[in-house]
Image 1 (cartoon, helix red, strand yellow):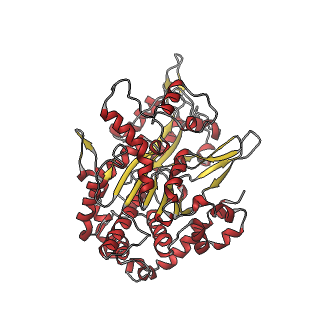
Image 2 (tube, one colour; image 1 turned 90 degrees about the vertical axis):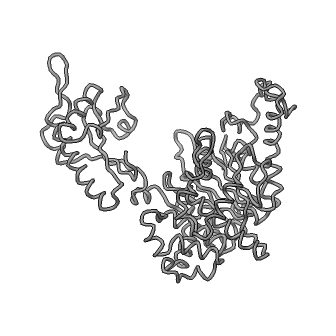
Image 3 (cartoon, one colour; image 1 turned 45 degrees about the horizontal axis):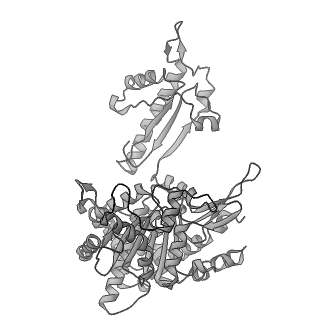
Length: 507
């Protein structure tokens, strides 16, 4: 199994090339400005120019988002990648000489522009997705206005979500939150953060495109759109299965079919029991069966796969096979060549290899990862929650008792050792509050105390309030179960431990 660094060679090579091209990007004099279209150059100056970044203050892309956007633009627009093999040859040729990487990336399923953005959960993948969509849209619009057919750009987009929750979130991001059955576009990401995403001169154009061309999963192929489309669906639509079915059931060849499944296979259009012969119901089901054919017939398409680790290969009984919805994407791609672009987003873009008690599992990363903003980088940047256990040797060495004291009737009270530990935690909390305030006033550290049982937690809560914490900042959550993390780390819940959670959001 190749080392992780070897598996991420494409990301490393492309990042090095991108950083070289983007030296002094913020000052408007980077080499990349000479290699991209005027529309892209304008976007880069708007997103990353020194004056614009300063004017927007805190409303800017963070370092991980910036690298992801730039790497995607360099790979697709500057290097004009028309396949995964082509991208490797330009950005990481040496990686093709190791193991079976050359044979892997030369497969037919990689014979179109294909990129994976590895970004830790909670680091704003949706903002990167929206920025790249706007980049494509403005470039395609500019090319059409000049009568140019540039195969690198499109106005046709399909966004695939892993489930209903993310599906609804994406509709919120593009169309706004739903109030009384109607979506309020003013609450969408596109509208709320237009100052970041879109140069002022193009704002109404983008707003109009999004408002008129977003299609929900039941509208794809049916809704009339103007010279483009933003189709949002979950993977079930491409797999042609019900949303209630799970992934294991989808990939179970040879399983005995239920009678209803056999009927559905023979009679693809059958009225539902609750709705009878409703034409609306039949229309929806018919349209669902024809979505794939509609997408196959499009001249070009960019697919954004959100949480893409859900839609790649499955390994069962020693054999690797692609899941059904990825097969659908491959079919959509066949007739389009380089005009089909697959953009995957995932925090964990890998498959686990190995099984059994005596086999050590290894991670086999997707070959098309072009950027890597991992969890450690996100934690160092303060973008995701982090948990730190404070187990101080100097306190542990003191002759103190860290269990609660109990009287003859079994009523608990905090021991002196527990009070010492809690006060130490409060001192640490105060120090962190000062440190966080220097970075960003919206960051707020919190202290987590794990108690030996539910009879002790009210005593700890009261003690913290007595020590000066406001009551509305102290929350108790009781459970009779010993947490897994305590078992795995060897910590005994009979003692009180302090921990701190740092996050961008107010808890």
